[in-house]
Every structure is written in C-alpha cells, then in structure tokens.
Image 1 (cartoon, rainbow, N blue to C red):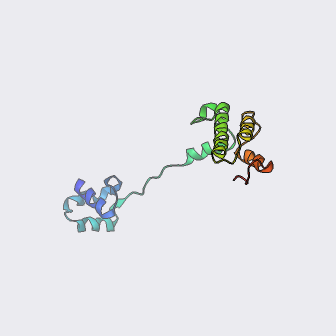
Image 2 (cartoon, one colour):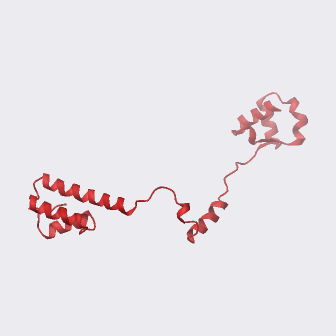
Image 3 (cartoon, helix red, strand yellow):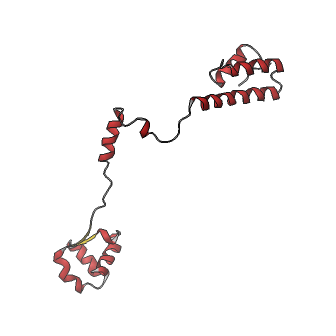
Length: 147
C-alpha cells in the first residue's frame, strides 16, 4: 500500500498525503507491481489526488471590515515606533542646519546671513526645508537661486 501510494504520488505529481485510494481498490493493491498498474487504477478512478487545501481568508475579511470601520486601531494594537514631537523637531532642525552649512561651505552665504537664517531655523520660523529654500530665493540672500 505504501509503495503504491508513493508510485501514485510520483505519477500524479503530488505529495503522498494527497493520494487517496478507494476502499474498493484495497483488494487489488497486492497485484500492483509497476507504474503502469498504478496508472490503470488511476484511469479507473480508484486512485486519485485530493485537491489542494487553501488558507481561508474569512477571518481576515472579518477583521478587515472592522478595521475599515475604525475599530481595533487603538494604542495597544499598533506595531512599530512612532516619531514623537521632539524627535521630529530634531530631524527637521538637522536637515535645515545641514543645508545652511552646505551653503556656507560653498560660499553662497556670507557669515552674517548664515547666522540670521540659523537663528530663524532655531526659532521655528520655517516649516520645512522647502520653506527655507523659498525664503532664501524670495529675499535673494544668495547670488544665484538655490535648488
């Protein structure tokens, strides 16, 4: 029986656990010796491969519907870290200060203008880097517009 199942699995191209043998064929299994014998039983419908089992998405759908309604979104259900206000502030400052230092190093900003802009950055005058660049270009603080 074990050999027959193994041969049938090879022929059907499935795993041994998916091969099913009809109770009516059990008596004829002792006669089976070759793959051709197994093929004959498959053709008769006494040996067959069970269909693959899939993963049900029912539970996922149910959960997804609830999440669409805004449920299960509380603090305890969240994964990963969030930027707190201080970290966001520090990142913003670093980006803008790095940009100002680059301009100063390239000689596009004189020290007085650099200091003024640096203080404005510290005072949260600019929303983000784009705002800073716009301000520099509008007030013509550099010889050529910055990108």
